[in-house]
Length: 403
Image (tube, rainbow, N blue to C red):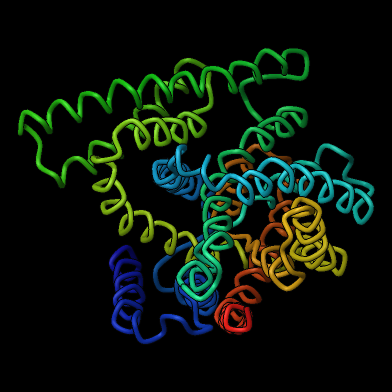
């Protein structure tokens, strides 16, 4: 059965690789293909390869993927550049993101009054981060104004790290973790949010200087600079967890620290993680389609579909529009930025990390809501990314010519 599983995985990834350039820029995005591929092959994987839903295995995959994604994304964010182009990214992260969580909580409570405020807030926090992979053609289209592309790119790179403390906060209130009970949630949460960043800064700073020193003395090859930087993220995760901090926040902060202190050595991290993190991300989408989506389909209701639709539209688009007030952006550009808030990898990983700590009924409900929102986003944002990017780009060119 293991050989059958390896064979199916190998054929799927090899087959996609052969046509990857041919479908680039089309509506057939990698997340669509891998998710639907996993869904179509779910029965075959179960019958011939023995692949079934295993919370422990998925939890481990989610942890490793999230560590790499958080560290790789944060290491590419230049704080100096962010200060220069601060208007749009800062508004999206510091104004729109909290409003998205607040509106998602309100909408969730109104549609599902029985789940309570804390669970509604937890689902809203899980679904708040965006995924640039689902709108890659948006970020690659040079006809779209640079400030719009940069804003969406920085937002997707940082909002998962910013949303993570909120996920932890509401999970703590629901007593979803094994580390604490209701009576000492404040102490637990404080340690998570304080020791995580401290561990990340310490490991990123010390490890970064050691990498720089080894590279200058010609002790280290350029390829292993990327390997070492990934190892730092894993070390930061482990150190934070030992100190009762949050390892994912530590990995994020370690990547941010290393990437800003040692810019010249960060390119090797980007090159190394571009393939590795993509492989893990697409594997997650494939397993999402093969294992999580079929299970979630049994629990999907009309209310869940309604919430998912509102989460992708009103819950994001209105806060983005409010955050852009005073920026003098035209309505089409503001609507475009509001629509391209695809939900994907971060939401899946956040959900996977807490599912095993939920009661059965809560786990089934959260899994159904997140899975429904993500699959709708994978399809809708995947199908509209290329055509809407082209349309906005053409409108921008016409505007430039007329002026």
